[in-house]
Length: 230
Image: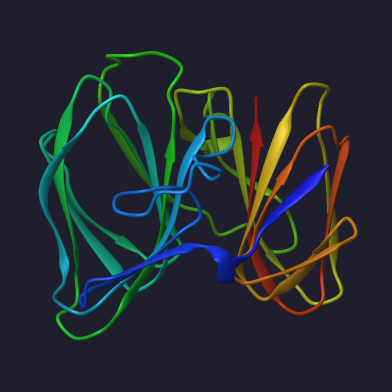
């Protein structure tokens, strides 16, 4: 079964400096039918104007991943981390027992475009942690970018999930097998793809359950994120 979440149907917010689209209920957007999928709780697509940002604020008991599509995200946290996440880089912050951080557009003039993803952790009060990494080998393959065991250079996430990223050339196809009892979320970042027998474009997401095989075919150059979930 494949359930589509069209980009055009997502919740939206416009704060001037921030334009956000919410796949699931978040902040002032609430839809009781869209509270997340499995352990995937937040899938926000944010565009932050030059000079804009989130002041210092707290998190706890959440695995937070950020993927920067274009621009640079300046990050500072109570763990002592100070960094800029550049386009194409992934960041993992485990909030665990508690962390505060701030996020801002590193540029005063250029826009920042990113996805922020929250995953429910496998336990409470875990030790907070931080990782940041780029993956240059995503072309026409499903590159593992986060996993519980951090294998193959992936970020380590405290949940039984596997997250893949792919830059898929027009005309190319990829397959991913789902083990019994596993589910998947597919998020199209750019371009247009066919997921099994469904057509998806940039901004669209899809939840898969009771499927054994996930097939992605690019109608045009595309970028996708694939979440293998318990």
